[in-house]
Image (tube, rainbow, N blue to C red; front, top):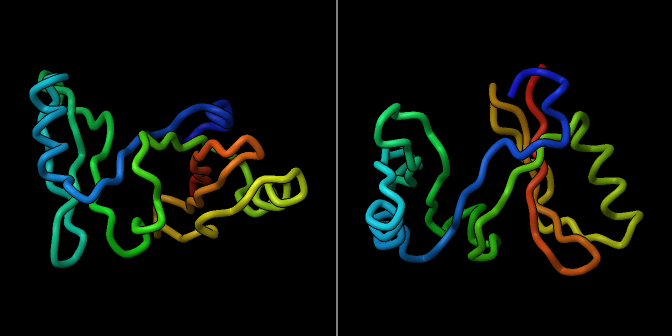
Length: 128
């Protein structure tokens, strides 16, 4: 996710639910994903990985802390060039910002929005 040509593409997907372990196991069986623990302080979220290559493909997260506001849907993260500019457009075009932009350290920043039709997605800006 480092090149400008990725602007507008889907950079990641994850699912935030109350029963993350059960859902992790469900998708492991249904799709064949393996899981890797992602430390979140006193608990783990999960990267779901390709069983052959080990490449991360999606996340299954607990509905806690900042994630407590996430709807329980498969959330896509669209890559944007300037998250603050994108948030301005969301607001001016009738959308809602559900979670304001949050810094993710060396990875970049993300926010969760809702479009005028009520659909949710996340925006992600990579660090340059």
